[in-house]
Image (cartoon, rainbow, N blue to C red):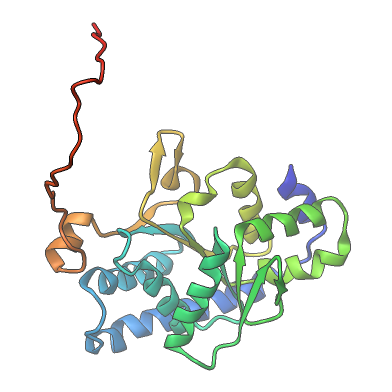
Length: 256
């Protein structure tokens, strides 16, 4: 198994050290929800709820789950703001596309322009920054290199899996056996489990391929209808358009 071989070559922080940092991070999030969030009215209703549910979820001892918000609602802001509040020693954000790297970095720096953020993709290898945004392809390539015995990349993998906080942007993109196995490196037995939170607008493909089954429970949901009623999304509208097109010569086939 890819995870087992790579895990043998990865030495992460002791469980007690990692868990102590995680507990501190959770305490910071709870403090934000209880003391600061009530006065911050710029967040949408569902975003405010999500912060509270994430804090409650983590306080209960859970470490892995996801939020389901429609496209355009602002689920990335929830992840970025959570990262800012938690302020871990190491934070990793995994995204499916290179374009997502720059968008996530730009949005994060709007919250805190002084944040040191490293990008990892084909043209950049900034593993040493407190916040690392990496494409899933680059993460898989890194795991594969270490898995094959190329120990020159081991320190970079250790740097990532020591993260207290891991966000999966567009989490539905990682529902393959190899990607799920690789992501388990963030929860190596005996070394403490990273907080791993996914964000998606599409969580279910089939009974055997869905986020809840493969990653963990749904922490919070905003339905498309809720987002429309709140005014965050525009409701769907149909428009009739007249075109100069004849269907007279198009054949038809009868079916039973």
